[in-house]
Every structure is written in C-alpha cells, then in structure tokens.
Image (cartoon, rainbow, N blue to C red; front, side, top):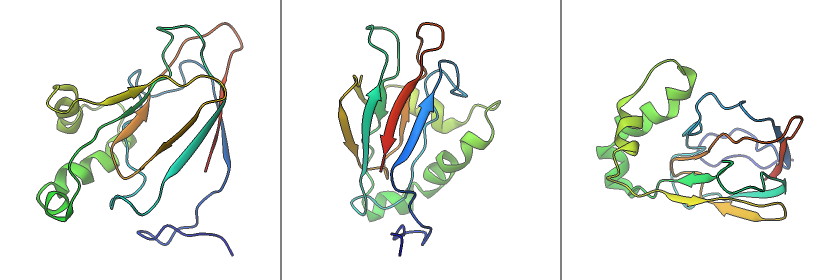
Length: 144
C-alpha cells in the first residue's frame, strides 16, 4: 500500500522527478506554497541531479520560518489558507506575498548544486526561485 499524508489522507507520490526549464515558474521568485499545514508530520527530501552552476543564475530554495504552533495556525488561518490558494491565481497579488516580501520574516535561502540533498518541512511556506541557464538547460531534482 502507498503512504498517505496524515493531514489529507491523499497518497504521497514517492520519488517524483522534476525537470524544470528556465522560465517555467509562474513567478520569478517562485510559487510560494505549503504541502501540508501541521509541521513535523512529514519531511520533503530533494536530491538535485542537475542545477544551475553560476552564482546569480537563480534556482534558490526559499523557506519562511513562520510560527506554526497550534495557536499561530488558528490565529493566522486566513493567511495560511490564502497562501494555499494563491498559486491558482498567478495574475493576482495577495497580501500574503506582500507580507512575506516585507522583510518582517527573514527567509532561509539556499542555492542547491548538483549532488546536493535538501531536506525541509513542507508545512512551512517555501518556494524554488526561477533560474536562468544556457539554451536547452534543465534543472533536474528527485523529490520524496
């Protein structure tokens, strides 16, 4: 049987291979999202098989370390719900984006290189920034 997400009951898709070309992100700063709501229940592991090599070429993983204890999830439920749906409306700007861009929460930013393994808690808002590269270049990652 397949593993299921404890929050939604939906089956996980193990070992998803993502092949991304430059410019495929709906937003240059990435599609900020959360894969689950409650932290500490699951972790995402990304193995970067191919990644942009030049500094300044983008592709950084960005994670916002917001408070997500029970009280924070209740008090900020509208924020987290909005964050959850904003990527379905790429032509709109939401207050969640403005808040995360305001600098009130300093994001953790990491630029992966080929061979890196990045593990994160997908209950926190996170994104992968768009990147640039030579003609025909793709970023390839394996995600659990």
